[in-house]
Length: 246
View 1 (tube, rainbow, N blue to C red):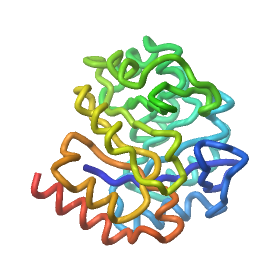
View 2 (cartoon, rainbow, N blue to C red):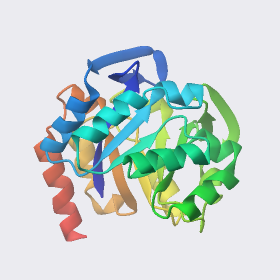
View 3 (spheres, rainbow, N blue to C red):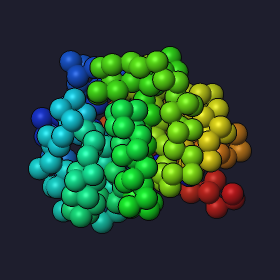
View 4 (cartoon, helix red, strand yellow):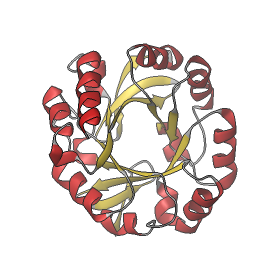
């Protein structure tokens, strides 16, 4: 179990959205590199970064901000948002990103994901963002007919390093993680699953550390950290203690 702090990038700034709505963006830091360095200094082991503008554009929009993050930290950085071609995968891994996250293209072009995962073992994750159990793409602007579990099963035995599962209805709402949905997905797949969307408090952290969540590989936290609802040291210590007992 790894706890990932999140940096979502919009117009070069660290923001948090509510349910993926770009019109409901709260700016928390205008220096992404400094924010990443702060997370590393707090003791987090890895970082989750999303280029929100890129998710809509289908290409890197906040590349300068991502590069600033990579220059400031040494811990692993996973990046998603608009990665839909092999050249993008190759370029970001060459720049120092430890793992790329493919979302929209996982639905539109699953063969691309499989090729990328084969070419870069352990370096490719799939982002499954769901609204009422159905996969949403293009920066969550479109909801497909594909069920989340069905999409995940497409990549069994493909070498995908992880699935990052987000319940869109909970994202940025501080309403708590979708434990039931995420655990059900994790138990249906052999691919490690990371929970995202809605982590609100130490109650969520303590539940993540419980045997109930033994199938989960990690969780992502955003607004709760920025709002000060989550104490980094306490959260990290709780997760590490649970890992030591596993």
